[in-house]
Length: 312
Ligand code: TXA
Ligand code: MG
Image 1: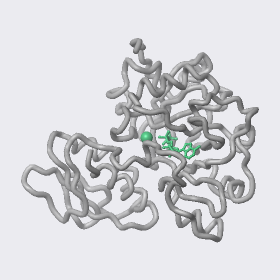
Image 2 (image 1 turned 90 degrees about the horizontal axis):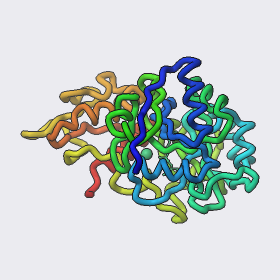
Image 3 (image 1 turned 90 degrees about the vertical axis):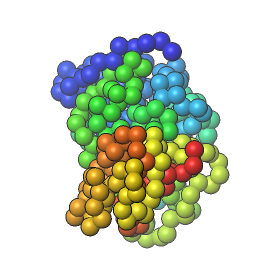
């Protein structure tokens, strides 16, 4: 893989302009969203999209989420109607990705859809992301900006540490406020929860007035759905009420630790801290993690923790 000189861009007119230009030219640009930092490429440029897989060392070509600035732009990429349109109206911009039938006229690289007849689309909420997408004027395919299988990045530093020399630029927008990837819903009857994430499944069910089907329909095996993912270097032990010798401890609520995801037991705060705290405690020791309630954002947090703890 050719060495690239990675520019760190500031979150202002100049930085956004340069990032947009690089995307238009087929470059690889990491950019912040409210969920995690994404590694973006022009979704219509097959060579640029292939560069994402190379930079991440992703072992397989899995479908990627396409990021656009608005619902109007999303309509050009996919067929968004019925329940999907209702969810878009309620939760976009925001941490929700919708899997819908792809439009041929969208002219996406086959690598983005992995040859499927559907596409995952998201309109991020962070104004900096939407400013970049508007200025780039192209749909941007972006998985999380981390090497395959590792912890997702919630700060520009995380991206630089792992991908410097492999990508063209990082737009530094500071820490991500949600801290977990988007919730992914596949359109269908009933709609299906493919990945719990930044919007609680309960909020989606309340909006639709029906229960979501759970899990994939077997048509794809994607990294976010692989058992071992989001892994620190040490072993991970869940539902711990304290640490053993040689373990670091990640606390929650009244269960103390070397770090505490949220002393007040606030799940939104815990989500925002999750990946950063796992990194800080990934210091060669194994990691014990306090129990997290399995409701609301806690479901998404527990999904990531189970994958971090899975056998590799
Ligand atoms: O928060 C997020 O969603 C972040 C930020 C950067 O936006 N992006 C992200 O993208 O997590 P990525 O590429 O890591 O997640 C892509 C996931 C796949 O693992 C797969 O589960 C699902 O999206 N996906 C994409 N296209 C799909 C399709 N056509 N059918 C089913 N699932 C699909
Ligand atoms: Mg990821």
